[in-house]
Length: 110
Image 1 (tube, one colour):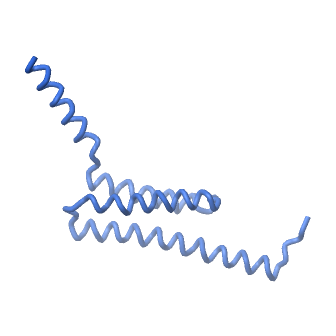
Image 2 (image 1 turned 45 degrees about the vertical axis):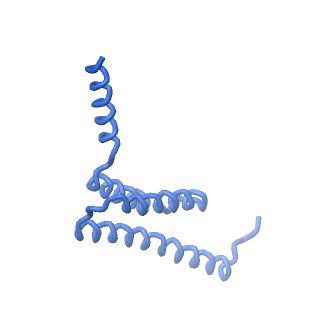
Image 3 (image 1 turned 180 degrees about the vertical axis):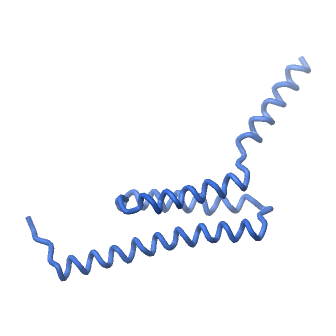
């Protein structure tokens, strides 16, 4: 009986540690997310941008759980966040440009 309990406890420990993401994996995931947004953002609807913003915020908050980040890793995360901010800024500029085009170009009503 003691062996069964020991095996079950060991299995639980292994499962719990397997579910934890390393900080290296986290940084890779964050980079991939921003890269994907960069590649696909021109096709995003406003609703999709809201979903993306929520996912971005969740990834930013996730960094807080890594207490042992090196200065280099912190800078890398900051660079990823800056890249995302650039994508967001470009989106905003494009919306303004489209609005100006609509105002002066006058879309034809159907």
